[in-house]
Length: 326
Image 1 (cartoon, helix red, strand yellow):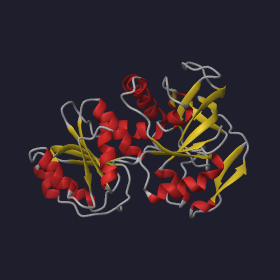
Image 2 (cartoon, helix red, strand yellow):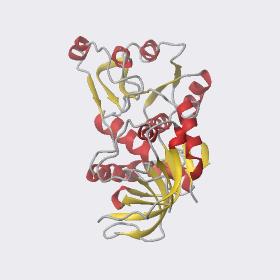
Image 3 (cartoon, one colour):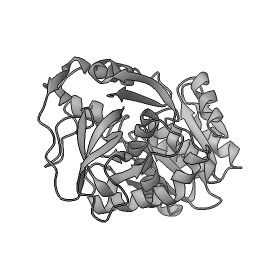
Image 4 (cartoon, helix red, strand yellow):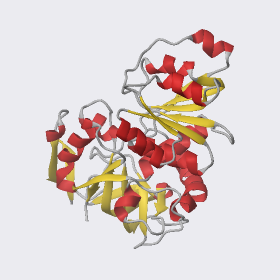
């Protein structure tokens, strides 16, 4: 099969088209003929040598795909050969065929294309498990999304808004702030020209946000503490601003704050199965009703994976960058 491999850690040019053997399926896995795959920050980190491949996972990048089930272990699943699904995978998405645990597959939502469906798994699993699982965003609570126009950002804004929460989001330009607002954020905050902490406090009558989803970390965390409500939660999912920073632990103690975080890729299949079930029950109907919409910024062919990574690293995009395979 045709695939994209990382020949060595480095710049986007190390992503090279190649021929690879077809995936070998394990128990509980299905083989998907890939129509489209998503491009995500963890792919970039893997390419640069900063995100080790989990034991047993494919070294081919790509954590989400959509396509047709052509083979595999379908016992006990709602799927059959020929069904169109999207799936969260541990790797192997940048290829014509990809193996996926059947419990991490979801039906392509009615009305969506394969490219739109392939844009869902990585960000939807990540946002739902962190915002509603670890951070336990509850009815009546507010959410601050850092990096509102990233793939994670546009997903978090739309899911939280659709479920009735007030949402604020940061972005690096006024145009991106308006894009956040068009997706449902009450206020887009330009972090280059405004103090997001002070803006959030002013919008909440000084109370602050109940939950913050943070892809920056570093020195941002102390600023986030300043605009976090009492009993508030910060959930860190990436370290774009660095892995260390100063924290006012006095505020953490006095106001009962929680700072937590997670990465999705190494979590066990059973955990991802539970998230898939929750997404199917709670979020898929919102997608099919058009209350949440995939945001696709640009689509490249599989052989243009290097160009897709170059765009990802500019951070000029709003939404998802995709690879079309079929």
